[in-house]
Image (cartoon, rainbow over all chains, first blue to last red; front, side, top):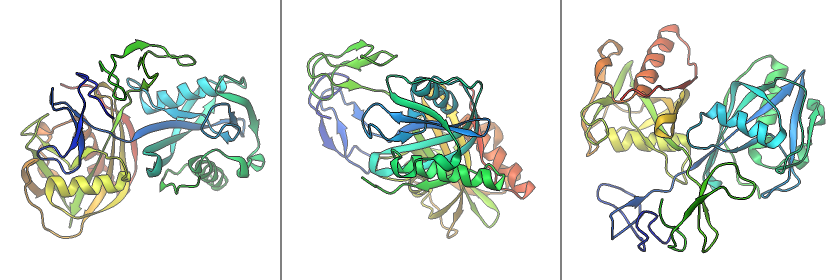
Length: 178
Length: 178
């Protein structure tokens, strides 16, 4: 951050009164610009026991497999965001279910919130964000070609919990992998 | 947002290629400035069966009671942020426990993540953010003078769950109240 998004002046880095961290502060209009972690929302969609995964058609991790997920937008709930991403990345209609994973992805300054979801129909399709979309059995999950640590963590817990007949939630910290 | 924080040019509002929402885009350097919900992290601290609450010394809701919570910073986990807020607002050392509440606060463009926490000692104190800090019994919670809908929701679920002998998590949407 170099300039004030409010008035266009050059910002300076300093600790505001009563604060404890340096912030980008505008010496002209006084605006303090905070930088905070971003939320990524998504789900593990299931249809009649099979799991839907998408091959990423965009960077980062182009060509690797993931579950439908992306940045949460303003003015939507976590669940609405997760359902929107399912539509955007796989053209599926889902009903969002229980909380699966709350993942600290500190190195990327993100928090990932993943739910279980149920596809309302068997329909799915590729989109400009996904090269390929498919419904697979749990034993077909491409563990070595998953896009992100949180993708793998979510799918492992999903499969374990389903085998145990429970819908647990998990809070975890993802280690940097790339 | 009026100016590009990268190069200082005036931004325009438009839908970038492949996107579906208008964004603040810089016609000079091409930067796209996304606005996303912010995370608020906190906890319900307990010490030997009593609950710690703080009277807010800052706006919004100056003079109303709350649990220690605030904006999550970059480079910290949800749990570290919740523990930091406990220290900043009440000078308490806590061990963060189970997830209590994941609250959509859509009207404020926030997501609140609250945990249960355990105070490691009986020590607490006021800070520049809190006019008063106290340890109370559950029946002394000032329900009519709580700061935010998520404060009330978290405390109600906390008390109910404790009475039931369980540590559930809750996912909910807060209605605008003010």
